[in-house]
Length: 232
Image (spheres, rainbow, N blue to C red):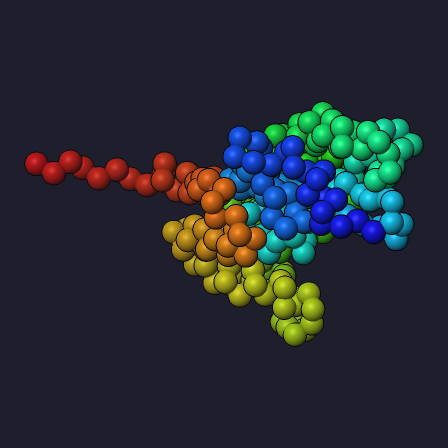
């Protein structure tokens, strides 16, 4: 059975003040956090000697890793992860450096994230399958007309069974976003995005690593605001 001690030993070369990752219990997060959270999970299996290595990622302003995207990595073609291999530490570090880190570095912006979860062959769960996260991303990217249309439809679905499992999850988005989208209240939507972001970052204990970054909606709103004349 995979233990915390084994995981600690495996990820130790990746963590520390000068390295790119930080460990929070059994989860290893990438230190660069703007609008996407990336982490590596080392997970146990039903076999004591066998474990899995998975890269997981989600937007910082989503409901979190209950709805996430992931890719599994193996040490080589038709190979698996076994603690008993004498070179397992070296193979793991090589996998992170050569395979996982390039993926993480290509998934830092919202456009990168959307492209990946829309186009990548390894993704089994598409963005459109996560209707509430899809709405949040449309808002963040400034596509309010699309977000409004999707939010209306999801709001109606929630109203039919508001206390169902998915209804309760989706309402975390629709109850707050729907009236703001209908009103076209861009400042309030920007504030809501930052609120959602703070909620997830705080829940995961990543405040020290989060780099506050304007949303595309925020940037476009600022650039379209009329300038005030200088006072005489």
